[in-house]
Image (tube, rainbow, N blue to C red):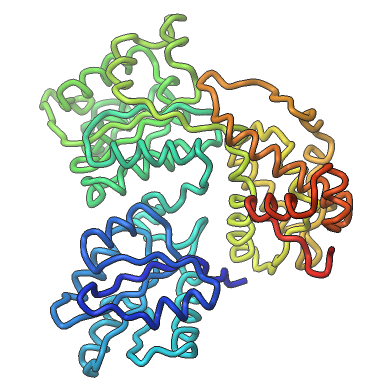
Length: 466
């Protein structure tokens, strides 16, 4: 199913504004933001997600440069260009530069609708997990695009990424398995100045200890029994880019000493060589353990811990960002609709209460796997409770007003209260077959209050239900 256009950015010419477009877009019920065709407008695009961008081209505007800037944001938001009295050469040039549609005044509802349809198709043709993405040569999705969520917990992560991406500061990412630590590392790399360099990932827990040193530093031919050729290590390959050391807590004490030296001066030797190699790279490390506790236990070097932990980013578990579950579920269903050639177009209202009450010990990865299972096993176009795995159906709901455990870093009380309110409204609507009068009585609020709260939480009951 093609995801509808909802949010639009209109980059207009401040010297000669065009009122027709905003009027038409607003009449279509689209969420419209406006800005100038300048650095300020580009900043709006960097800081927010839009489904499509309209650009007013002017004679003094270098459209190729502008489209290139948008492309460099690694968001692949489709662009619709508007110009007065364009030449054929100019129209072709703009399309070649990356615009998905080109229209000229007078703007009409039909021409705008046609352009938006093209943009929607363009978004769908290259969309991955959350909207549009560019791809690295290796096939890795880039930048913020793969991190999905709007909760305060994940928004805090976005804020840290923005502050750190253009620095060479060593970053330690800490979080449970399945929380997306590598996605954060990718965002730090691809949103920063090193994005044109390689992103080299090493899972320190997946490579046997006897091979990990060779993977990291490389070896010379004949350095050991099976060294039949010279091998370039990951630190050397990452020159000009980023090395991501995943599950660094699994590294042996011997290798920890060598890593400490690399972090200090970016110099090392291949195994079997005395030649010192210098490489320019940034280091980002990740772990699912509490490294400070590992240091106290003697399992991890204290000096290496402080060298890695210049800045820490905590990847929040899914239970601390439950307001993101509906968006994540919708995104994963779209993804598996494409890969599994299914056409799920509706999520039953009875599903979400089970999703929200489950603790998700496997975090976002578990939710993604659950969505894939549901899409595969669904018999129609609508997901129902019957498509849920038994562990979700059998999970005990959190009692009214009860928090199972307050995380060490705390949480935003307003978000928890809002999420609980949303849950009980969903439950009341579910129990009353979405009859709003009955749901309001069940919650001991008047109908107007219920409607206001439903609007605030973006809850829409089926039409015809009073």
